Length: 230
Ligand code: ADP
Ligand code: ZN
Image (cartoon, rainbow, N blue to C red):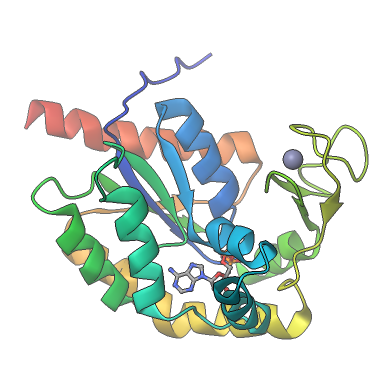
């Protein structure tokens, strides 16, 4: 068995990947392994949408159509959570940045310390469509499952909190198509942007959850070793 890497509460990792690539699942696992906060803009917006506030209703209207939430709103949320007075030293970012403007804002907020690594999870279209069709989310705690690849012990019930599972409101055919389209035109250019800055690690995201986690951890550890030596 491979040794688990040492926790590192200062790790700063961004996870990129198309809808259905396993981004949320892998980000949660990385957060547990390294002992840092898992920050998912999608989860944060879904929680706000569920609160029924004015802002929540606005966010929900973007999400249900599969459109991006405006940059100033998203950047404001990240600034408050990750770079405010009680900001954690490290984080796993999932769902942010999603366009070059957001990446520039993040680089500015992250300052000289910057980021450690940007992981891009690569999965083919047939696979991501299949995964999204089976995707279920806990309506209480937000944990992700898949009826085929990652089922709960009791059908329809969250393993972590026993909350009821549901399909996401934006996992409709139209919203999925729109999100994948926006990913190609708006988010995919980030891969080159981060590669140019020497931060990108492409990881094969085909395979079961644990296999992909092992590949991601190997990529992260590779970068950390290079930094210690260099
Ligand atoms: P997915 O990766 O399947 O699209 P997420 O849970 O990451 O799901 O995001 C759900 C929705 O939340 C997006 O479709 C978008 O409306 C909104 N959202 C999340 N992150 C961002 C972001 N960085 N910029 C703009 N909108 C965002
Ligand atoms: Zn739950």
